Image (cartoon, rainbow, N blue to C red):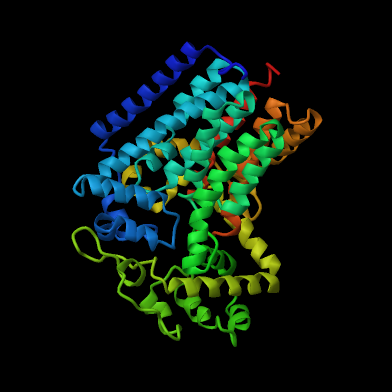
Length: 481
């Protein structure tokens, strides 16, 4: 086992403890002085991502067993909090966010030191990044976006640590966070991300083949693979989300000419999607108003999670449509078929939408609508931050932010990391770090802009703290290198 950490244990512990204490003190002060709140109750009742709060409170196991629209992670968290207290369960969710904020700061500090070879970048990044408005706003919003960002940070840090130590506790933590990530956010797909990650770890650490197979690959196949298999047996698709094609259809169809869309859909089993597109171009639409007329035999039953049209809140009101209704499966399949047909008919039009999605991706994540309440409470800080980091530059089709260009640094970073790893037969630590971080970020960017058009700026927060850490860490280490 190699020496870890590559700095004084006492020094690192003091630094991290101080950084975490500062962040918690700032959040507490903002709550007391500025009215910062964990925005949750109304959003959880109305959100399409989560199951009925009443069902999660009363029938948690059955509800999760019938979940098909999303991975189970955050719904499980909500349900467990409701088992403890229905009146104050949102405080428990905030506690979960704060806990993972602490882990995220721990990882940012470690990565800052690893990437730069110096102490001060770890301290600076660990202090500043958690005070950025995007971190504060998503940390105080009851959605999986913030926890998933921290899971990604910790996954990368643990992988970098394992590359240096080959120790079992790090590997077990790595396996746990990897599955937590995939079972919370469907963007991180088992096949496209999870197994590729596992394969890369095995390829780089061939001396640890048996250990990696037993403690990383096998748990991934059992946990995340088990959920995917459950969906395949129960609902007929191998994935974590029964919505994926609806998001793709939104990305493919936006801005299209009516005649083009009519030509691609008319006379096909998906013809009804043309009428839906005219009235509800986002495709995440109400079953009764937009879809029931097109379904030959809408499936009906008694289980509320699968068949209720509107979700029941804790107070027994029904404020929002149930997007876990089983009839969305047929719609999702039709959206997949239609999207493929449209892409093949006009690939250039689809690529234009991908380019537009990339522009959205590089916009401030703080402008997402559901953050508005806390954004108002921090308005001065948010607007100053946006002016400094998101000023406008000339770009394709108009003005773009600096991130539009900065993300392209990931490509040479990936290439350089791969070159160094091949040159040194997998033993280059800096090469591994660059390959891992740039590969992770490029995967998230690619999926976020190719299968979504509209909320891309929210998706960008999944990698922003990691990207800033990599960029600043490497810049701070240039002179040392």
